[in-house]
Image (cartoon, rainbow, N blue to C red; front, side):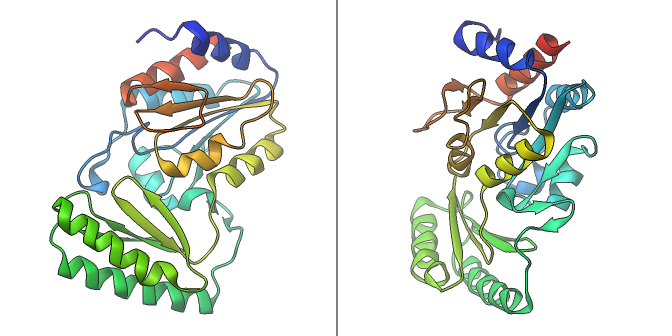
Length: 252
């Protein structure tokens, strides 16, 4: 896909600013959506473009993912100078902005127990455990079982005091701290004194990031279909690689 038209023009303007932040979600963007989360291998072109962008003067680069930061590092193969932010924007290399206290850890253990009971009850569902949250995946369940499991999760642990709910594609994630990819972009923008941010995302959680991109020069790119507040839209991970390569080419 050749990046031209309005998106190509926006990329060119973004890439020629003095200080910028280039950031993307991982699953559905740098890597395709797959049945088993642990099998989400990144597009080599995207990895190479992100690494090349991070080496350019005045450009900060980040992956902002719902995954635990350690898992994001292992799957993507990326690290410094690419900044890795896990747990939907809450987990940086310095830890969590909102500490996971013993009380919150106990609450998380209760949520995990509930999710594991649901996974045992509904075939095809599975539980992913993270440092400050846990996710119930229903992608591989029948439509009926998926709907039932999500409904019980929403009626049960998602309604508990102190639990923060995030819905995604065929998942519900419950965290014991507040998470926001939008807040993560604000923090990264401030740290790097970025004049503009280009962010690529595909999921419901990325809408919090898109909502923060209101400054002149900011570029928001939605991957795939579905309602969005992003200004631009592309089809899939191969197009993400095209966008990242276009940023590098324009900056270079």
